[in-house]
Length: 130
Image (cartoon, rainbow, N blue to C red; front, side):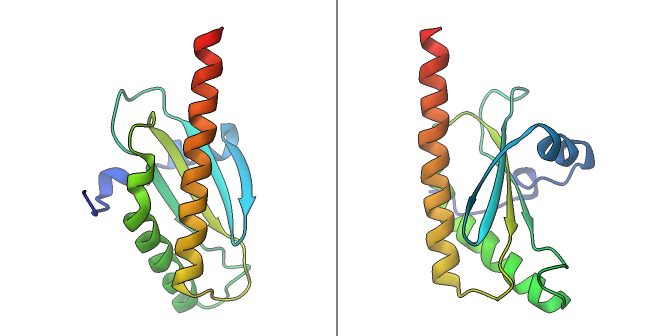
């Protein structure tokens, strides 16, 4: 298994970020709001991910950085859940006011990835029947 998170798997293009926020679907699973959009431009590969911790929720930069580090690490360890799924753009937005411990963040992210996998496979099944 590949437990890395290279820059090619992180969403940093301003155009693609706007596209994700404008056209993507979203759901909440505490402590995250998750935004996702199918990537029709690429054939294979992993999800391209964005991590965000808003200044409105966490005032101090070191708190935001800590939360984003925990989010990246939890995703990096659990991204294998999305193997075999069509490429997607994925955004994790932290919505809690408190700093949550790593184990809870990791549990939430693994639940999110499992939910996304079932959601995308369900959508694929509906597309094949049309």
